[in-house]
Image 1 (tube, rainbow, N blue to C red):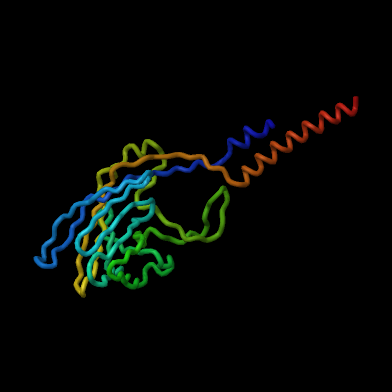
Image 2: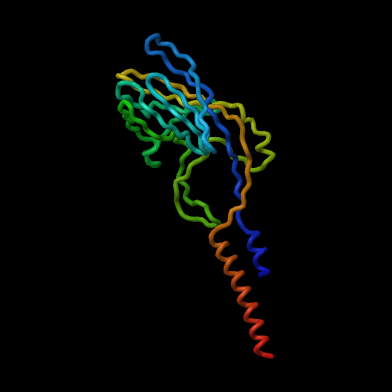
Length: 240
């Protein structure tokens, strides 16, 4: 039993930085006047979920942002079939750099190839993600559960991950904005929507994670210690 405290102290400290990111504004064109303007954004909350909704006469869209992806559900509210031309969708990062993106259904290895447009018939909804293609890479050696294994595709978080609480506290990312430029084709005319997201806050976290191997060793060591103690008592009793 004396082995248990030592084994329980083992494990890997995983450091993560979680970001609170919200949809700040939407710029949408006017097909009639050829002008653009800002539209209102509604906040949708349900238990632990927070989403951001926007709609006009053509689309209804609900966004939420995870560590590596911009997740959305888009509904075609128009009377026509619409398309999203993925090769023309752009992610503008916090440094105002335009980045190529990929969405779900695209193989990591094909992320730099042309991506067919998504076709959305009237009244239907699609669920998809958006992430910068530069945030995907092939790692020759990956590390998980206190062990290395060969070869895996990995995703880089959208925003910086800090190595200490002090670094996170001095981060200048809260208050910065990023944008997704998404053209939507309606009746052969492209309507360009600009969704601007603001980084509201961040939270630095440290978590100790135990590998399954250590858990097994801990349980086995404890059980062995108990059985050894019982065996010793029986031996002593029998001996006397």
